[in-house]
Image (cartoon, rainbow, N blue to C red; front, side, top):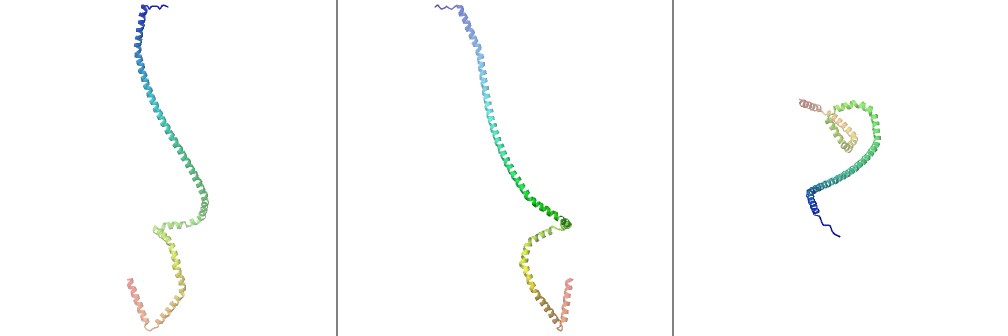
Length: 214
């Protein structure tokens, strides 16, 4: 089989095509470089976007953590509120029990006040006068007297009452002594000259009394 020989016109055509190809390649190179630059810029933007996404993720993690802490605090607050409500319920129950136990006493006190009402109304003028006429010193004296009452009672029982019992036995003897002294005075009065002596004594006592009065 014989190969066809190239025609010189074909060579010129090939050279023209090669030149066009070189020109196309030369024209495409700046575009390729521009595309490469755009690709690098796009990669930089992608990297920045990835960094921002990472920061956003970290911020989201922090927010989630804070939300978790807030939820924990809310749970703790709810638990504390539950405990407070439970304690309040117990206090309310105790208060209700106290009120129930106090009610009879209140009724008794009200009954006493109602029964004492007329007497208190009668005593009101006296109490008003006493309140107006009583000084702080008198109140203090009454308080001191009340404080001394136990000691006074003890001393009365231990000291004064025995003496009074003894005086009951001594009474007749004292009367006898008085009768004897009266008889002695009568006997002395019958002695001669005792009348003048008694008169002198009485005059002297009267003069001393007048001097003391002056």
